Image (cartoon, rainbow, N blue to C red; front, side):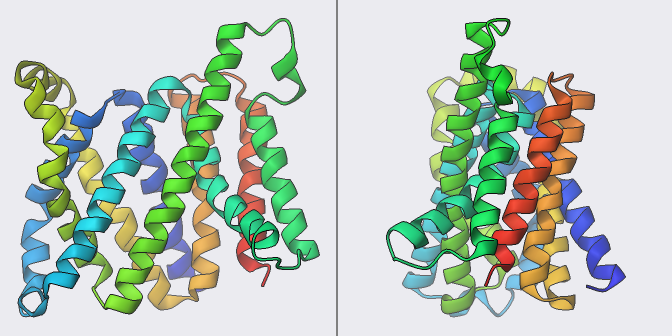
Length: 294
């Protein structure tokens, strides 16, 4: 990859880890997701309208159905991710979520479709599994010194992180289909999918408007920052893919796991930093190997 492509990938990875850090620190729920969607609408509408000019009028019912489906799927993913951060640590959830998708895809390909497991594939799977094991506490997870409450919190992070990973794989496949087959621009898909999910994401807000107002007063700044850096990171990755092969850019993005492990340990004061950092590194290596195994 060119130096510019590498820089864009690193910026994108840092943005991705950064908005996840904000989501964790805010400890928000479904209403925080709606706040972020509102800010995305406010901030990105001028650019989206400029890019939509002459394109959106050509869309039919099928295009809008695909966009709405992607929007709802991404909303479910966000809700599950926020739940994951409420029950466990960033340094547990983030690498598990990012690593479980490729792990599950490879395992399904071997078990269900009968694909032969290459040496690289086996190494990648074992690296992800070992990384998750270390993130969960390694041999120390069974130590009597670790409280049952602490173990339960870590295991909950692994479970919810894996669930998040499944949803990541689902929305990635859906987005890829819409972009490659349906032919909708990634940037327009991201924007209009956000618009399409607003009628659904506002429901938790309407159930308790006074509480939503209280949370807005506390969380609007975090939601605004997230609404800026999340799409910005996505755009950086998209542009990097125009400068370098996708097969190189996609795995390189997983450096975000290391950023999240470092940020979670330093800024959030999460414990077991060393082993979680090593575990995140192993998960990232495993994902890269799985991406390049073919």
